[in-house]
Length: 325
Image (cartoon, rainbow, N blue to C red; front, side, top):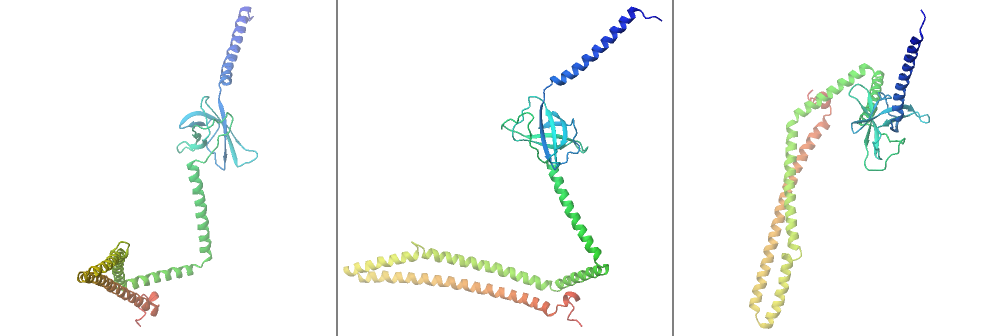
């Protein structure tokens, strides 16, 4: 079958049109990519796992998607550092104080890069480095790893110690511990009354002693008030001086009888004040003596309890029946 020139022209037009359509599509896609402007940055993560983060993963700022991860590579000079490059939408300003952290998407294990912080600092230039920091989850995971390693080390040491110890020895140790615990429990039960009495006496003694100390403090304050400047003692001295001056004047004026009466009243007041102070001190001294006696009785009870245990140490092992033979 011979192909006509018209058919040839139609085939040529179809072929040329297809090529032109394909070139147009490619130009649109490539041109859109080339004309699209993005601001790119990078962050360096040291000793931080980036598992779950891939090229194309989301980049977020305050929860908003602003870009994607463009590349992930290991630093040639320091292999403990992973460098992550990413591009964000134009118009998003990144300022000093911004940091990059890794976030997790639920329980899937996938991760995204999140920019946090920021503020009104200097703008970070495009293609510049944004500092990285550990996320809270990374810190918790790191601490959990350290704790797990320490627990494992302790368990290994305990297992090694138990392997070197004879099972019969361990059984004896456990039995001795049980006997000692039982003995102590029996001793405490047998002497519970004495212990309670000792504690009660000590408590009462301390309360009484505190009261006596309070009373002494009150007496001390009263004495301090009495002897303080412009207090009763000073007033008495001032009065005595005034009376002395008055005596001098009255002698001159021949009023001896009246002056003598005032001096007598003054001396009587001083005597009453002295008796009051002595009485207060004597009462406080008696209360202190009573408190010390009660404290002495409590210490004697405690010494008696201690002496019984020291004289009969076998009670700790025999359960308090060392005297019974």
